[in-house]
Image (cartoon, rainbow, N blue to C red; front, side):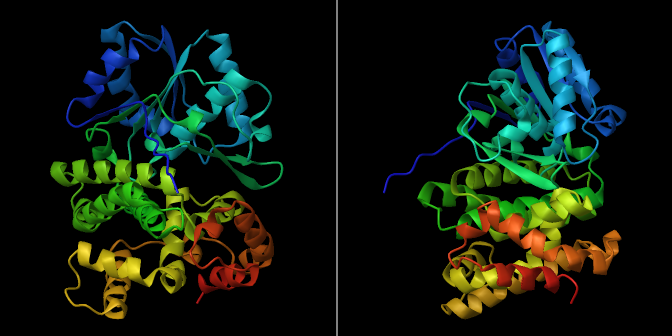
Length: 383
């Protein structure tokens, strides 16, 4: 069976990547819509970008309204601003939400209609150029052909997936991740871990995607705890930014599975940030993933240096134990810690299980879960 491997058209990484990227942005158009959030403006990350755009002679308009998980109404507003200001390309700067929003705005600008029409649909026309600049090491949106937007009318996180959603240019400059506080560093780092783990164990995985999954996992286990404890460690920040990119490339090609499928309904209904909802689920879902992918977890235990023997079972045990220890060190919040009411959560489990399975992601597990199993795993968040 043949496999097709997708990556962004251009990837610029390392120190001064932002400055170097201007040589490419000049060819994308005369005026950019910068899609971001108020925190990126406050932290000075948008100013870093606009300083370089000014020096390169590229005009821009700033839309800083993506201040939560992106909704269809936020996309509608961005489309209006893009058209009113005669923009011809987009720059998403921030976490996954601004980058996903830039893709969604571009899709509707090029193809018309409403973003709510696009769930599960093929995108027919090419988007205007999209530049993705991550400021966290985790979401991987800079490398994926995916955008996740919440339809607030239906309470469903819409998964849009099409090769046309790949960024034209991904800019991976560690200077941006230096501003991420410990909790954000932890949650987004575990999000990257989920991308790498799910893509490595996915039934859609193939040798080239696994190379990226594996490299990401090795970096994450070596560097995530370091940057959580010392956010000023430039070498580990750089390594985590690279790991996020690698994990994003991996899951863009091999898909995610049960963690992400179950995570999206939690975010849609209880407004939990995407990285955190994945992190909450990892400890609960990892034993289930193991049932269908024990050999893969054994391989990962070898790769991260926590097991040297030949027993597949013992190696998988070592990987699970190491992962749980890391999650404890990172102080990942539970739903109760986040402030979710247990009774309200339990009442939504049937809907969440249906919506999660409908996304298709859990079906990428080698042991495809039933609706009853997904409900059981949701309940496990409260054990």
